[in-house]
Length: 441
View (cartoon, rainbow, N blue to C red):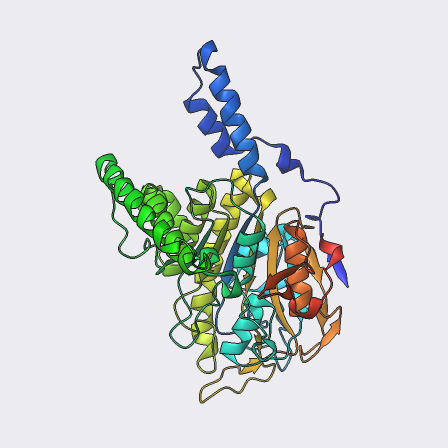
């Protein structure tokens, strides 16, 4: 079942044609242009047009398994519903959790999937599946994170800016999947989270220091080239790539400095680790970074086996404030058209309220929820539904491969394309499973 609210659109939204507040102010600042500057303006406009067509992804990974009952598929008044209330959204007839008022307001810009179904209920393996489309037991070559695949398939137009940044991590036991068989060149640049830049990145590097580093790098490259002569180039590529990326990064050290953002913006995103990380994600995308993964807290933030309903409202409110501000800003800046925002975890929570000790919910893969939007997707769509107690998918089941096929299609990629590792063809989605959700494309 697909419910299209008043926010859904067949071709475009009138707001797509409006002057954004930010773009107007940017244009007003440089208004007094001499006639001789028009060539420069034309070049800048052309570059801006290329950047506008650049595809972006912001994945906010809700590690631990967010409860569908306390997010996108509440069942108030049912035995499985729990103590939270539900509130109406901007899509008529659709309600979500009471602690998500911003996402309720923005529901007519998003796709809500209430019929996710999967089979791996372990955090480590489930998170691996949810970020690679490959079950660990089916690995024939180390599969890359899907954002590493995006980096490989959708090269960034600006080589001086990292194409993929990974903000935060899941914890020691739950390492984020890396670039796998694609090699470290396609891994994400790591930031520790909480609005912090990459570790040990110097600030305010002078032009003299950059020039000295370039000179040292030229010498290192000459030595490396002699070493690589007659050897397998792959042995030195990763080493050389790391040095090249660091040199470029030093020239862009303020890229990660969220202190340059307005105090008003920092307040809107919330005084939380996630708020600072979502603000950094927005800053990175605005500066040209293509793909950003944001971890909601380090560890299993959504793993609510006990004391679920007291603590859930705090983490849900924190999530709603930060992500709501992020989506608002992407829409306002015009980046929404080319940015895919994904809000998901590795599975859901049990319909029965049991948990360990005080009330909570355990792991559940049979029927769960998530949300995504932007990048030209059908707005206000609600895909699938569960039965009255949320114990099973009622209609339109969506699998992890279906989800990845949809993401890749939205980004202009063939989800069943094959890459190669040691002569072995490996499809982007495991065994070429899954079909895109054509109703949202």
